[in-house]
Image (cartoon, rainbow, N blue to C red; front, side, top):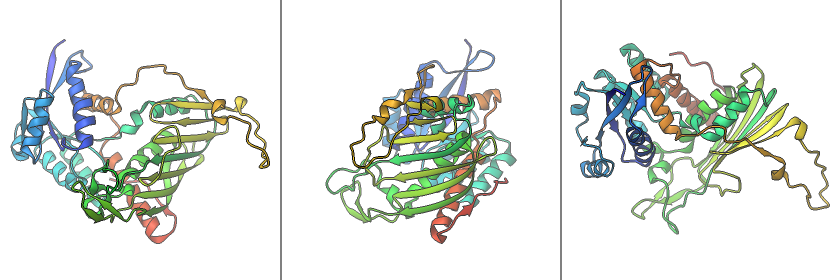
Length: 387
């Protein structure tokens, strides 16, 4: 098949997400499979240049993954007309400025979320991208997880009947750093560096809720900093100024127009006793489903057991055994890679693509609404976003 080169500037690939998911499991994997098949049968082969502030670290990553081009000069990379796409997985605080710089250079842009730390900045970068006429996208990776794709299949098949409620439990214990080494970067727990689980996770929950269960209409949120002191990468103690837990309730407008209630707990200060690090429990009039990152189990209306409340005897029902697994009816590729392939087709084929910067801005909108709810101790409406 004929091959088309896709010049790609990748910024922020020294971080965990940028390196593992976007570079190694997406772009390198796409290169190893021979590219992305386009509508006319051609293959688009990404030719990345890796850009970062630490030249030695970037060079080492490039060598390890067979990538010829790398450097520290972003302006020079953006000046190359043969590289038409810019990707950013760096810090959220720098993202709007970097995206604006890339758009001014005529590049299509794709980025991690949150796309900004404030809704004003998020809307402004959306307007800049639209005015420039470039293609733009924001990562919404959880929609491509096998577990959520199975939930979406059930929803589209009408399995749930009228959807009633959703419960999302997310998180695990992040070590403080005094007794055991930390497993997440320390900046995540400093508000001044862009940390906080509300900003981190509600951008995810916005697109998950909107796409699978119903448009978010309002939110009631309470955040917390359960662990006030942590230790950084050098083993030095610091004050944790960012929230490490978020307890939120959402009112949704279901896809059939009916109301749906979502309860979402997100925490870096919880210990896991569930099937996965995140679980999605969906109840409907005709059936219920529970999904994790990969697996999904269902209990239809006709197979729902009749439990009896009796606190005087040990529970005899094995409730987990009463659920049926959703079968693996198709192969499930890496979710980040799937979205990369979709965006590449969007850029080169003008294929339909809905996960643009406006969708990313909706996540930032929900973050601000949740923080307002927490601050004012009340429900906050989330209006339609006009860009």
